[in-house]
Amino acid sequence: MSGAAHEIGGQVELSVDGSTIATLPRPKHTRPSVLSFSLPKAGSVLLESIMADLAHRAGLGYFSLETVLFERGIPVDDAPADASRLFFPHGYCYGGFRRLPSAYDIPILGDARKVLLIRDPRDMLVSLYYSITTSHRPPGTGAGQEALDRFERDRASVSRTPIDVFMKLRSERFSKLYLSYDRILDDPLLRVYRYEDVLYKKRDWVKNICDWFSWSVGKGARHEIADAYDQIPGSENPGQHVRRAHPGDYKEKLDDKTIAFLNELLAPILDRHGYER
Image (tube, rainbow, N blue to C red; front, side, top):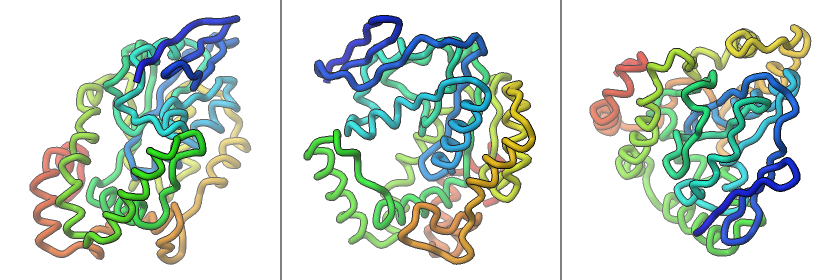
């Protein structure tokens, strides 16, 4: 795939193979742009929803290139390098990231305040298994038949695979996604949240995000946003995006040998972020 970005009439247009996939107006506000990162099945949709609503209340635009790529069926690794031109130093909250991108640079990465939402990688892998087999939606209508076929093949293959086997097949790839953030973990402009710590305290979490970014969002608006996404099922719902949410699901779904395997493989991640093994 080939891509290019051009500024036309005060907005940047990103095209891939001659087709425009994203258009971003130059910002109207001088408030500093911020970045919002997460990982697959780490509460990334929750974070994206909260950040989009908060950014709007704070007077910033919200933009997720990852969402645009998914809807078009373009793999993240195939994003054009020119995508870096979409990142303005002011006026936007950029979110939806499930890893630190390698196909393009984020020129504001070193200067912008940012948040990262993580989760116990063992629970993430279990959630991924059920997401692929039952709840994850296919790429959008712009994706094309090839991307849709790839999605269906993966779903069919994983559905035939026992969960403990799946853990061993996908865990190393998942570890690499997690470790992609290592180079920014010591950045003083980064605040890391653990899914397990904020799951049951969303009002406090939303306030902390606003304080971190110096966003003046009223208490009523903060509570409204936090409560809108305070969805924790009373029982397991395999076909829903929010299937279980509660921490420690891997202990119930995986056998002891698989847990021991994951504990060894994921030890650097578990130890760095304070997860017991």
